[in-house]
Amino acid sequence: MPLGERLLQRGADPSIGGMFGSMALSLSDEWPHKNKAINERWVALLLRYHIRANIKSYLDNELTIEVVAKGEFKPSYPDIWNRLLEASK
Image (cartoon, rainbow, N blue to C red; front, side, top):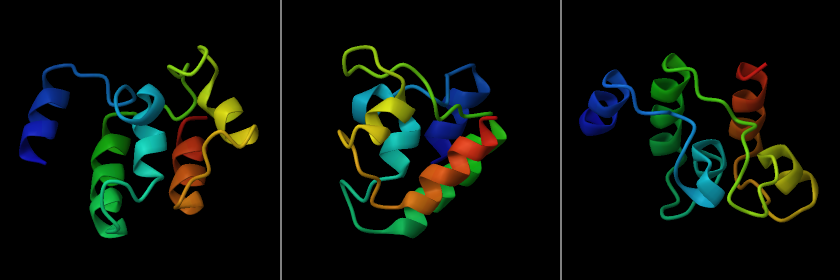
């Protein structure tokens, strides 16, 4: 995580990357591991850098909230997804 924080300090966008191009979706999933504590640590870090959960995804340029609503992605950790959505408002 030190490398991730260093990138964020230098201007990396905390919202971009991972599943469908969305870090929020990636953090809401258990892949590539099944350790929610790891995701929680990343959530805490990315919230400090103002992660946005509802961004345009790489899936037909749809908003991530639409990807979830359509069932194209089902969060393994819906509590994390909902926390990130709420923090994005």
